[in-house]
Image (cartoon, rainbow, N blue to C red):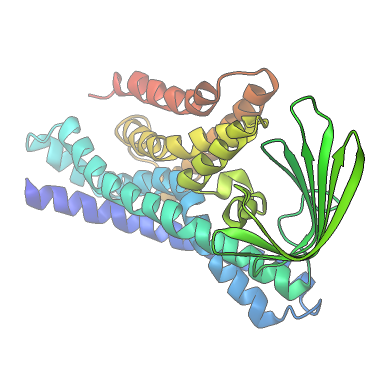
Length: 354
């Protein structure tokens, strides 16, 4: 059985790898061509565009894997079906369940590997890629409005007009409020840098407001400790769905501590958790198609059906996620229901497989 499991695993894994390479090549060239439109701006060169595109590959690998796993599994098992090898296995007493277990084993290894890439490598490279691109183009990063970055830290509101990729900030404004929502203190610093677990502000103008009046003081340097550190700010620079589960959890903790709206990031966190389970469901969904009505169809037809199923899942998932945000559906349910539908569909289709 080990020899048979290894043969099935090599066949399926080879097809999954082939599909991944083809899709990555398509995404790579499309992204690189799009980036060529910005070449020549600032210090952004062709080499820079190529480097930026290469740094996107781990992220594309993670995002594309559910679709790739579905199509690759259909092609792998389909190749065995077209050469009557599946028929021989069944005639030799190998059950469909045994074949499914062999497919699940190799898929599980690949899911774990891709999940590690998506959690440990892709988010870090994405942040570095966006920072590199922004620096080359001479743009700010981590800015949410035309007036710069606005954030809340406890009863303080912070505005940073310009944040550079090396942690330097310019025109930092801090507004501190009392419990009765009255303004008690303002701090302005033209320059600042995050160092030794705190912001080091320079040329500070500090104004304290009291019933007696306003007391203004000038200081050469000031240490400002805040939970708003560069790692938290960097999260804002990229899309929530491109962040790791750990980064999302840390940012959610920051938002909850400060009473901020966290729906989008909470949903992104649960979507991230569900991706490995969705991938497993897509792999299983390929099995009844191969053993059922698509046993003797061509490779082109398998690719078309697999692509349609994968794209259909992505569309359903994206639409339901947005519906969940609009109608206040619990984030876990909004993120997991499409995956549950895939498993339910697989269960129904497997009843017809004999």
